[in-house]
Length: 83
Image: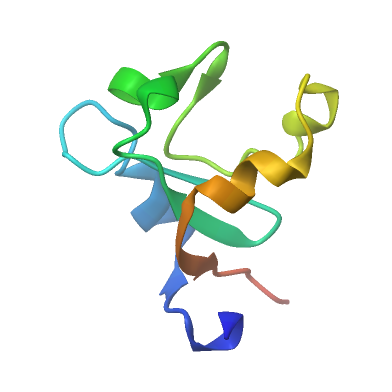
């Protein structure tokens, strides 16, 4: 159940960009994915996209569908700030 997943803040996500920590994480549509073992995210970069950030707004123009995320490991929910 997705509601049981831990919350991950943008600050925590930003530290997992593939350069100085072994974890490589990305967020998409409110979920955080561990892409550390994906050959497509070697060194925290996938084409013009960088790990450690929310890619929701960047991916509508991607040549693939959301189904690509089904192959990735969900590790958390992206924490949102409500005002």
